[in-house]
Image (cartoon, rainbow, N blue to C red; front, side, top):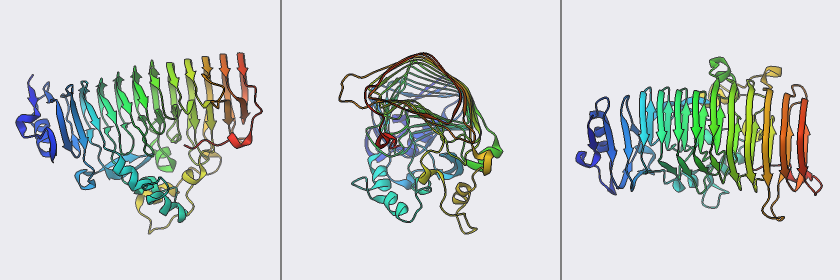
Length: 430
């Protein structure tokens, strides 16, 4: 079992030149059981592709810097926000592999600011977002604005990710898709800003454990998904047997199920997690054209400090993004056509059932911090069913709203919310 130092293959530890070819050569020459070692230094790279039965070791002081040139990222078949399409590969890619490990105290840095400007301009009010929104195309801009992810695990199994830091990703930080038997442990995600810079996305995967991770980002901290629209419903690739535990969530939108639910989400356990200043604690989101289901979910033993929305559930989430404004045409690119093909009629209403939430506490460190205890909006035609809150103690500014729920049970629930619930607080920005 050899250790292959990438310096010996010509990688530049000063980031003055692009090291993609040297890094890939080291990976390609590794034999089963070998370790490819990234030593201390800064290595500029485009997309890299690991292979089965090897370890990528990120040493103390090692930084893999993502190139800011789109040409340095190979266009591959992948899934982006629930749609199968051609898109840039990530910085590190584990595609169709088994028994791969990425470990060590080093850093994967996407240098995301350039990609963020591409999306929303210098002032966060321009860029492609402003252009597409002006043309009533908000629903497609995230897909057309190609921004690399830091790490993608795709159609792989028996994968271990541990100890490293992912930061400043151009798009999602860590994306697990169509894969099984994955462990993420003691990973740190730290994104200062950026649109759609999710921390960890678990997408149509099975047997996934996320534990002892610290996540701070500018969107969902940890999210479980299963595809968007008719395409994903027909594939029927369910996200299931997922455990998220002993994690620390800071900036971001909390632990989320959805909004891509078309393949179904089930048997998820969220337990013993701590939230500090997070926008949301536990979140469910979907839309009226997603279909699928969210069922058999256990959420327990969470502590929340200064969380804006302790529980946020919306089944008609973000209409400008969720619903295409054009019925589609043969002239549309394939991914535009896929986005226009939702799950129609009553079948498009996501079934949310058997949600058990218990032993939750939420506190505020200051009276100046806004918090809403509950913001739950199910669908009248297909309400959320069999949801239980037990042993809950919430300190909040206002109680909030609960609607579109059937057979809701509250056991030993205490809420301290002195202010009147205001409709002006019905919106959440992500």
